[in-house]
Length: 221
Image 1 (tube, rainbow, N blue to C red):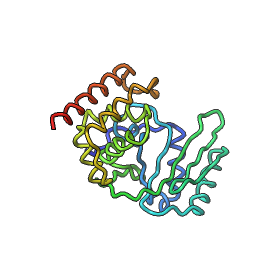
Image 2: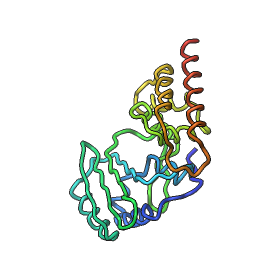
Image 3: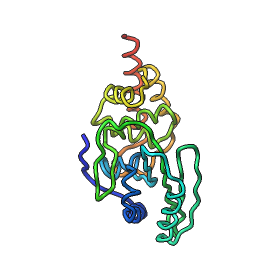
Image 4: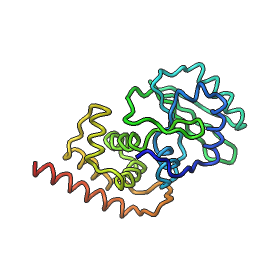
């Protein structure tokens, strides 16, 4: 795992990332992760417009704000930002375009694999993003996470991901608990904009079947 097979960023994402490359010592502190990294660098399966930049270093807020002010000027855009604990979120309002959301996050967890490098940008490994996605399912019920997990499971098994969560986060996800999380797919009523063919009915049927399989495994044990 870990080979980058295709790059697909939106025009606004590319412009933003190119602007950050003007600050290499700042940019090297972060790695791109989340849905945009997964789609743009590995799966090319759905549209993802947010940019998640994680760092093992504590965020230098004053420097970050200064650099972002310079970057935003290049967009001729307005912006808002807020800090909540170890996360600084920017929303850049670009004329005639959808807002661009950027999250800078202090994320104090060791990566399972080394990140990949794309033109000076560090990108989280497929394995790490996959393991993070399984944990995300336990924290929120979002269509994008189920869609991502659906395609991730073409390459990894639940058992691979559960082991990864335990190793990376020291959290043990029991099969019966995970089964109940998967069955929440019935609460999803719409998909994100897809690039690969997938219907809501297919997604729901897949995870309902997976939920039954995991629950059965628990009962047998």
